[in-house]
Image (cartoon, rainbow, N blue to C red; front, side, top):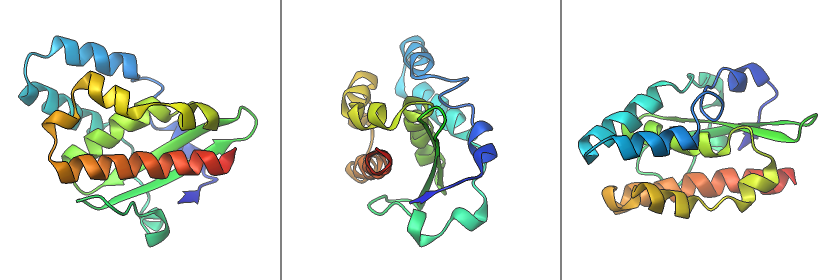
Length: 153
């Protein structure tokens, strides 16, 4: 996983800044069924800025995902704040990555390490509505991000 110095890639990402986990929870409560929730998650994924192709390399690849997924991050040393960017070739995975980015972007490495993503997924009832391979890939993505945060400590 590459720590990227190009902060502009990360500041362009509205997830975690303009769209928060609280927004996602509110939207999930408002939406009546899982078809609507899937649509919302896919729409979240469309908000993710494109990852430059030069970052889609093996070092940034998230192994364990059913789809192709890449992850890069930036640590703002002045504020001890971490930002992540995840890209996927699958729309639903990009949307799930957007949920993860909403939880992690703008947090300190320690907050990211301490964040209980499984509890969030349970609260949103996400894992019950994903295939086992998608769920495993989502956990692999979270682990890779939390490992990067541990390295930044």
